[in-house]
Length: 396
Ligand code: FAD
Ligand code: SF4
Image (cartoon, rainbow, N blue to C red; front, side, top):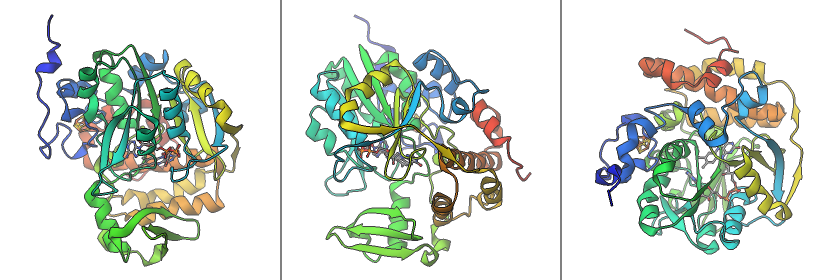
């Protein structure tokens, strides 16, 4: 029997410089022998969304169809929420519920998801969960870059043939690129949108400069009362006004990978579960292909659904925010978050809010790449993102 050539490759040591250098999102691929494929697979070295859409969905998005342009290839979209929300999940826990159901029904033998380490609740720890309990222990967003793909070698070693992977866009692009090398009979991909993530160090800086008790924070959210709500271990809630944040200390907190990402909506997953695009308190579901439809069917009896809606006009708000975003290198985190919260409160709703968020982030990221990596601009920005950005007047 011949050994697949990637097995001769060697994972990079922890902490060593990655091929994508400062743009690396720590997706985990380079922690495995699949680093062999990094030049082709890395989302920051080889943007290939259209080709991978074709591979995963049998078609790439139609740039002349506005919903495709913004939200990627899809069969349907809807708003949904769990009839019985999972306590402690990020929203209502649709992601965790689906993963548990797939294990219980025997559709998959394992689920790639991310728990946190025992010592540090914000330190991501990817695992292959084999029981619903292990999946539930991975609920809630880890607000840090997470090497979800660092478990890929274990898949081949375990002999698993049916697998669900939960992940964000950059992880899923690399996964799709090496999918055929994994020796699986069936891969299911459950994605979440993702934007403005930070390194563990960046998060620490934010907590230390903003909260009175950074070590006991279990969760935080930029809220509609214009304050950050920090929830602490003892259940108390600390509220810090946006305008009281130490902005000068919070420059450059978003990871460079996230400042140059154009896959907010996780284009290559079979099924995507987020919140933008849905009314407050509801989640937003995008079914991209037949596999995604099969997955959603499994939990139809656990969720209430309603059609997606759209209201308002985002364009003036996006255009007005571009000068602030253009200063992205110095734009403090709170300003970007605040912008989103203000708009959420007074501005466009439903799908129009999702388009607002996509437009704002794509114009900001386009300018960031143009200013910092001009040689990458042409190939790195996908055609759909160029078309979205072209709707706005950008500074030179
Ligand atoms: P849960 O049942 O709580 O499950 C969450 C799942 O996410 C877990 O299975 C876990 O394995 C996985 N996960 C957690 N952290 C990470 C991570 N860092 N990397 C990869 N996988 C992870 N949705 C939007 O609509 N708009 C946004 O702007 C947006 N921004 C996001 C930013 C980040 C950094 C992340 C991680 C997610 C973001 N989402 C966004 C998705 C959204 O917040 C929820 O994750 C999604 O709606 C699922 O909620 P849930 O209650 O069903 O998830
Ligand atoms: Fe490797 Fe992933 Fe970093 Fe790219 S983003 S260099 S594939 S770890």
